[in-house]
Amino acid sequence: MIICLHLDPSSLRHWHKSLIERLQKEELGNLVVSFAKPSPRHKVLERFMVFERWLYAKAPTNGSKPWEAGQDFLPLLDGQEIDVIVDLSGEGEGSTAPEAKSHLVPLFGGKLGEEAAMAAILQGGLPQIALEDRAQGAIIATASPSSELAAGLAGGLDQTYARLITLLVATLKMPQRTVAPIEMREASLPSGLALAKKALLSTIKYMVMASYRRLFYPSHWRIGWRWVDEEDVWSQKSLEGPTWQVLDDPGHHFYADPFPLYWQGRHYLFFEDLKHADEKGILSVVEFDEQGPKGPAKPCLVEDYHLSYPFFIEEEGELYMIPETSNNGDVALYQAQDFPFGWQRKQVLLEGLDAADVTITKKDDTYWMFCVTRDGAGGYSDCLSLFYADSLFGPWQPHAQNPVLIDKATARPAGAMRWDEGRLYRPVQDCTLSYGAELALCEVTRLDKDGFEQKVVKKLGPSDVWPGRKLHTLNRSGRLEAIDGAVLRPRWQALRPWFDRKFAPKRS
Image 1 (cartoon, rainbow, N blue to C red):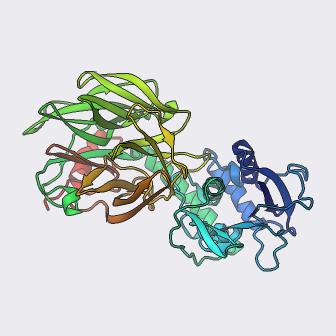
Image 2: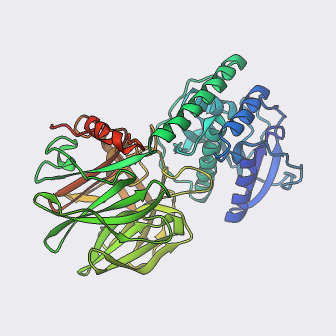
Image 3: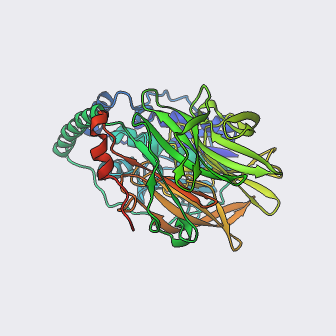
């Protein structure tokens, strides 16, 4: 297959270089290049992004930096018959792109060109990416990138371009993809004066956030629990019902990713336990009786790398746990040796990938693994990848369409899946507003080796019955149901009682 990149030679950025390197690594075909008429960059916007790179010095923005490439970085198109044109020039009518069997053009918020992406980001939020095949006259793939790492315009472009690379590679590998409705963004580029004002506001916001981080712990998560029979979240599609109780934490730690476990007639709650000072998570556990936690939580698994999301699965009478070990670059199965505190690595299921929030279910005779995988420089929460196996112990095979979904609102798992009357449901993190901001309850309507589809049944967010800023995990085992959420937590412990009262759950 011959793939031709149609580029504007005056507007090359480092993400173009990353795309070329990725396509060469994937060996999807022979690459050639053709050039559009030069259309110089918007100088005021470039100066604005230089300022942002100084302001957000710690944020990665390499993809949006100009790339001073020579003219020989790829062979020039020389009369070959082209299979696919990847048209990144931003040309509209009167395009100089050569003809091909497939002519892929990215749209940002339904609009053509990089300036459309910039306008959408400056308006607020990363735009939806759509791939139009002009040869077919149809949209053939879409992606909604997450923005948890996007700092300003430069950072927003970085995240958008990273997911454009993901979408292009996935589409070239497997063109049959799920297409979401097109999200049109009516946005225009601001004037130089408006950008100057935005630069001033960005500076003020940066200073305010620096002060905030001195006064409060960032993203302090807490766990809510309750005993339920019929009135759980799944049955009601609501957080209403029995009052949520807060699992007390030390203050300088946060508790998140709660996984209740009813095992051998007893209730336990496992969760991520992160010390703010080093931002490294371990797993802790507390046993419950009818009155609630039986004493303080205690560590049950500590590694040299970060741990979170302790997913449990029972197989042939044995209990296994799959914690998130993305910082170690693998997915590992742990077995209980001295329950609940003794956990030993039994087997590595997958390695060489950054996979988070691994969640497994079984359909017919096949095991299905759901997780978000980070692809390149993009966010952590928008690429849903599936793997399948005939046995829990593998070998695990990747789905042909991976990532099967690129969507900040419905990709990332938020707890164990459940079967109800033959239908499969999964809780997901809705990261539209920010990482872990809300939950969505989804029904999986297709799950096989050729495709995946789901639909949102209900969205849930913090409320009076569970106040705070975020909500990103839902689980139940036996009668114990648990959620989590982020609240303001002052670094000065003397202020904690006031904030705890402010964010106390209300009776529904």
